[in-house]
Amino acid sequence: MFDFLGSVLKNVISKPATRMYPYETREAMDKARGALGEIEIEKCIFCGICATKCPSIAIKVDKAERSWEFNRLKCIVCNVCVEVCPVKCLHMDKAHLGPLLAVEKTKRNGPPKPAPAAKAAESTN
Amino acid sequence: MIKTTIPFGPQHPVLPEPLHLKLVMEDEKIVEAIPAIGYVHRGLEKLAEVKDFHQNVFLVERICGICSVQHAMAYVQGIETMMNIEIPDRAKYLRVIWAELHRIHSHLLWLGLFADAFGFEALFMQCWRDREKVMDIMEATSGARVVVSVNVVGGTKRDISSEHLAEIIRVVDQVKEDMKNMENAFLNDYTVKHRTVGVGHLTKEQAYSLGAVGPMARASGVAQDLRTLGYAAYNDLCFDMVVETAGDCWARTAVRLKEVYECVRLIKAAIDKLPKGDFAVPVKGNPTGEVISRVEQPRGEVLYYIKGNGTKNLDRLRVRTPTFANIPTLLVMLPGSQLADVPVLLLTIDPCISCTER
Image (tube, rainbow over all chains, first blue to last red; front, side, top):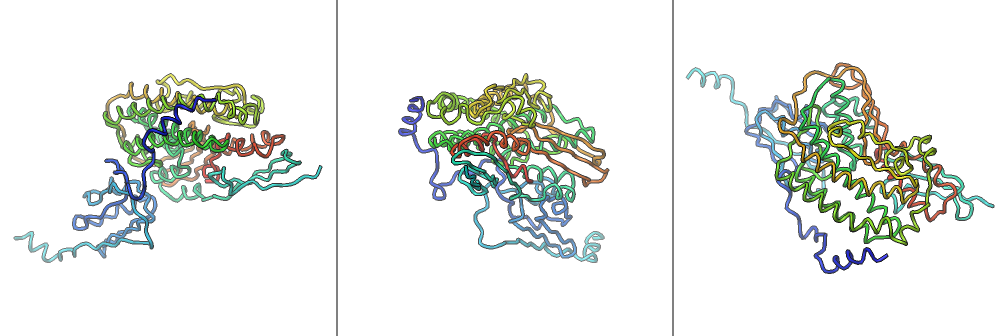
């Protein structure tokens, strides 16, 4: 009946097992999948593989418009987009996403594509 | 005597998920129990026909958080059988390590909730504190605490480094040590035994004929555990089944508690024998044909029926989860018992309603 007494006494003298969250937060683990980080849009080639592979349809890529759109609240943080990106322009942040007040879509437009004429001139030079 | 019907759930302090029971009572005694489910149906099986078969891994993981590794394992093993993919040995061992870590955290969660159901809140805290150590090691190795997303068709997504393997051994040893301290409180405490011994008795014949699975069946003496089939790396790890014969709430607690020790042993054996090499193979083509894949979850046997048609989408994905198989046992255990015993009885089947309704 008094088997648990030892544990109780140990708990009385030891530090609390919990943290005073949110005033005190734990450092995220090194490999943690917290939230999808900001895209390095200048590297992006708008191939759309991330959008095709995304299991929750959180990413939209428009090749013609050169835009990359991401719905944070649809994202299930599975890391697939980061793994499949051929130019490695996506990365995962360690920290978790904080509370949001509204649906927030991130839309990023890439720098305009150099005109074909300019490109051709560049290559001939 | 006048019969009264008392609704139990879907919202009840003892239930983490919505399960509704109509209890037909005579005074304080239950005469009949009528279960009703359907509060958290999400149509995941239909969604699985729309997504491609690689994406479905993430979908089936989300059928249930607490046994996400085993859901994904059952699915990917089924697809691998259909596509004749031989995964690397290291991946098999890694899957076992993560699956057993998951089983430890699920059993600790249940033991804590069970302690809370019979009113021992200090024990609840103790269990969940230990569970937190397992969750931390899962975050360190896989990147997430609950839905670890490590299984993919063809192997695993990540490897575990040698430092993390050492850390896993340290954590599971610590959990085992702490469980030894708690074991007496769960199994031998005078007051706790009053709530568990002889309550909700289920005979071996009843368990067998009602199709009980997992710890429910094993606590009634039905020696049935799918890990004996030797999927993944279980064949090489000399798995030892935990079976009790009493068939009451005490036996179910004992089975789950002793399974934690078995998990610790399996994890250490898997780490000890972990082969070197690749942890995933590239997958080409699409699955075709049909397959039944079975895996032992913390709650019992989960069955996946998968039908492929040679395209990236599946024709059908059907899941039978352990809680669905265990609910009929409630209809035998509840009649004749006292209303005050319902929370304890209900928890001993370890209900996972998200799994059941998908």
